[in-house]
View 1: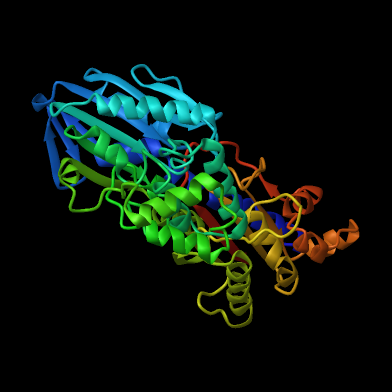
View 2: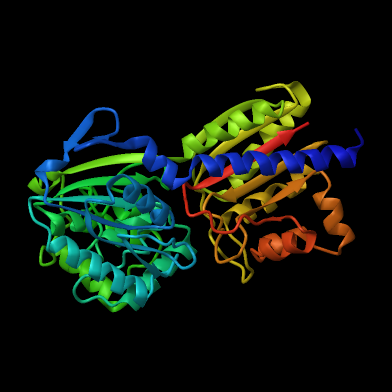
Length: 447
């Protein structure tokens, strides 16, 4: 096999491994794996069941990029019992449903349409009683798609502080701690609205650790963060004084006790909810591993909890690939290394890109020193930053091809312009909307 044929095979294989990972995160199938019905018995997971005859109505609510196929699965199981339902999805991520109304909203920055949808969802929950069963479908992006600003805060102020935190490189736990305390829907507040109804909260996890209170900012989960921790997060990034006036006042009021804290674990409302994670990054990596082994690679899952600086994570993956080439350690070539999670980028340039594209750009120079190697990083939701790409890939020849095109790798790195770098080379990974989100998948192949 010639060098060019080898790299073409690596490219084809990496795309197949990514596709297998995304397929395993299919929200409809994830719900079906964890929810089943036999007559009036609704089985939730392995160890919990509900007698449907004890309820007068079934209501369906939710928010997130993968929520429409989740709701489709619920309709397939409980369609004859569903009285009403409302879910909010990112534009272009909807599906035609029979009993559940699908509304659109903005992501990653919330918009007025998302706020209107959130108000309707909260209104439906406030009208629920103790003989109502609520099935909640929550997936990645749910936080931005369930925006209901707390008293004294405007949606534009929430958008501004969200953008400030994104640009500063705040991680998802920090982002969501802030969002919870600026919202009347997040941080357990939707459960507070639904009480005394009984809630089955199904979640596709897009956060490291799969913590229910962090997924979509935990609308049905007890919140462990406080207004004081929000102040510390804003202070950490120098944003306390730069935040909009309504945000600063809300945080100060909360620390003084004049604004209500988010509901905590001891609140009795949480006795009426069952939280269950139906999909995660690790399950996606397992499917990717199975596909890689089918293709003939010795495969190792490094971790589904990769976080921190994007460039550092990328360079570490490249170092492991170089070790495989030199010593056949930690797995002999042909080898596939898989990892996942959600890294962060502190944006300093004026270019276009996302963390996955920047991940690959950060290791493109090192890839040139590893013969017959390829690296791919992509978001399982099909969207990487404010672009139409899910991510990008680079191989042994990427640097030489870039030089031949007159592309200055360092210049694109400094300007955070990974999108235009890979677009020029035809190395963007485009999947289109996947209607799921279990964070990112990183793939390293060494022939």
